[in-house]
Image (cartoon, rainbow, N blue to C red; front, side):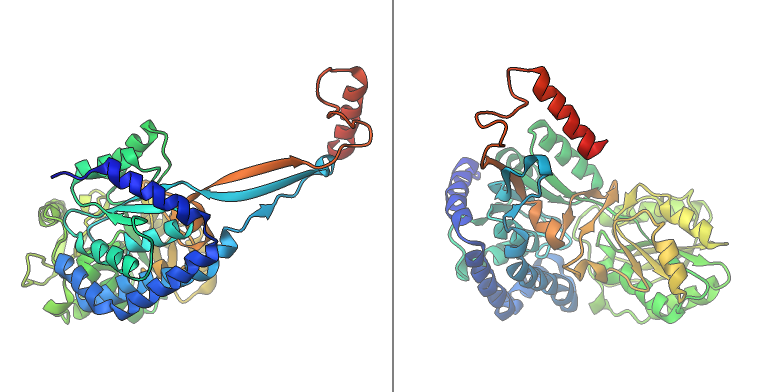
Length: 462
């Protein structure tokens, strides 16, 4: 039997009307309890994540569970501040008016989740949407649905009213139906699929957030702490076998230190254990990586390291790569680490920006002034200096993609306001002394009021 979207939506809309009428403080009280339930049921959550992804428990806890707990803690404390009605400042000419701006939830938010982070990028995204006063329906990846289901169940167990957070399972067809029925769409996934989502949402004039693919560069300057840079490079590429949109996809290292750097990376890679590696969450993964490697080797690259894993993943380090190779242009979404050399920081910057993606980037140098200078010239929504991927955990800063990496943002004030639409209420309070019955610019048009208006424009703006 198929999913009855009409019934699901009717239930969600009825629940949302009651939920949105509650004070934000009441929603925050539920979120505080939900946060407690998440913590107390962490083993249940981790088991669901691992059942789908087989990622190490350290990653299920440190990347997924921790992110959702931080999200819950942040928005339960900040939502009332972010969503508070405000008085808009008016020009002197309109001091007899009162202007109020309020935030109104869209209604039902549809979340289309990815396969790689099936808990944090479904339940974590639902939290600000719910706190903004919306109902949420999640369509998780058909490959990894269990994390979202467990999270939704825990939300109900912690006191969230029925039908406010629902999960529908299925493939692309289910996602298409959700786009048709929901009032707002949040999609996380590949850029090609994201374009299709954007087109469908545009046809229906529905707002959407798109967090899409990345091709994150890492730049290692000559004076970098090579031990830290090598460790960051390894974790940034091989955590969850590289199946993160902000994972390090390509490395640019100063030619003078390249040999030493590669040796350090390889030495660390050799210490990786089978328990630290994850299989693919998408069936197409291995074939895509094989194609990228074959193309690179054919064009002159060589394999500096390859680990034969118990799964079908085979972590690999490539050297001798350049931008004629697909591996430096296309998102690999797997444990494939290409390392390229450069002659100068200017060349490194040019190479890093030579991409359609702009989600994340990292820069390693001990020179703080140089770090600030070069980081500000990298074309990416998120840039880390002497660090990697951890910026996603900073809730008070917006996380967004540039170029073909998406629209909208996660986290911070923007991360909750985007689930609302502003309503401006413009109220006439009292008449001006010389126009008690109407505004002087209303009908009928007369020379006197026009001369007055011209005088005022000159006074204030001339």
